[in-house]
Image 1 (cartoon, helix red, strand yellow):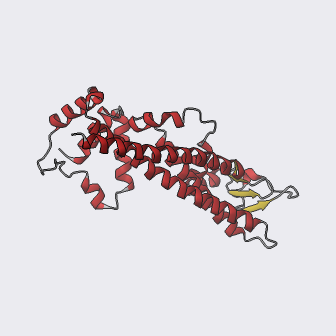
Image 2: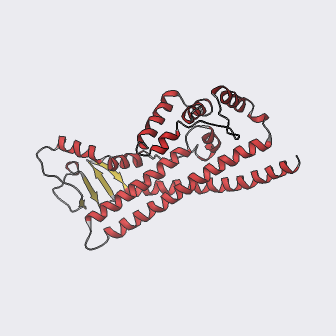
Length: 273
């Protein structure tokens, strides 16, 4: 059984992911790693057991069905090991989210310092905004992964069932900047023959600039960046990052406590075997 087939089977039967979504996932995977042959080739590797014997579809399907149907009947040792894996996965993601939030705070702080200078470096201002938007979008993507409704997501649901903020604008801003070649095309269609207006910095006293005619423009007083006229409030995005950080710190504390409790339970079980 090939590695890709194994993951497809697991995603469908354990996580409940439909086949079109799985196909889309692997299509994206191949596109992102098409220049890394070793990663792509690994999908064709044979899946083996601990003794190096190849596994087949029927064996794995039967094991998955047993796992789904008789989970509560499994040994405390197996259940403990399964939950330790979940907690390890949570710590991996919370650690990366904290790092990306740290980068978000740093880039936002540098942006605020730069805009207060008497002589503003326009290119640096937009460089820092780009850094800010990329890091905050990474926070959003990682946070979305934690809240995805699958086996792991169902365990973590209590931490995310009352979210009162929307991360959509984070993704839209990131997409604008990462796919700017498409925005250039759009601007050329909308403003054919007009001079290019880009990376302007305006305030309440600025006259004669229509933000809808600009590729990128910053309202430095309001901390608002416009891309092709679409508005993004940097302060609001920064606040959302703070809300995500609070949730992540709570989740990390829970995971750390749960790891210790699970390890003690596992040690006690093994001692009584």
